[in-house]
Length: 154
Image 1 (tube, helix red, strand yellow):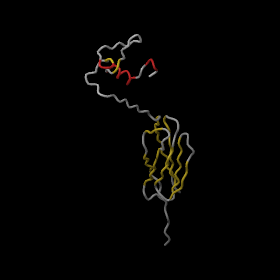
Image 2 (cartoon, helix red, strand yellow):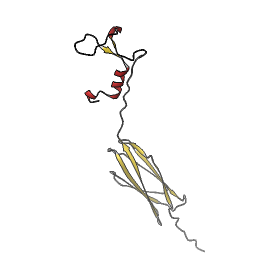
Image 3 (cartoon, helix red, strand yellow):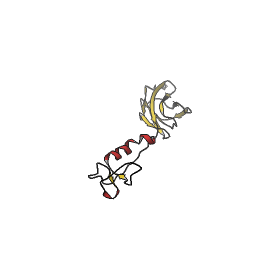
Image 4 (tube, helix red, strand yellow):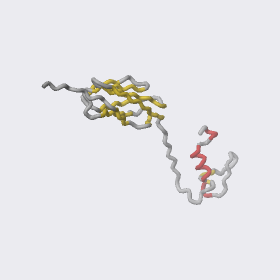
């Protein structure tokens, strides 16, 4: 008796990916076909916003694609897994943001210096151009620096 080979359809594609990321950084996506005994080979077609489509045919139930974007925003990615008897398509989105800047503001000891004081430890502190006294320290000055000086565009 002659055995007849039967194809096993692809039932689902499970995607592994981050929900968000940074621009100019590679983003990795993995598609896994179920059932594990789906008929091989499987052709995976990846389509992503602002990217060249990627098609690979593998004797495996897993495919990985890596894309890099240079513009922030929501990107849509679609993967289709197809064998000789079936095809399944899944779509998802990824939100990309710009790289962030980190500013570290170091301050030395501020014990008992909640208000500005004059250079040399004098208690007089006049903050105008006609004064010989220079004001330093003070919690308000530190707060202004952290929040940014609105007059300097900060």
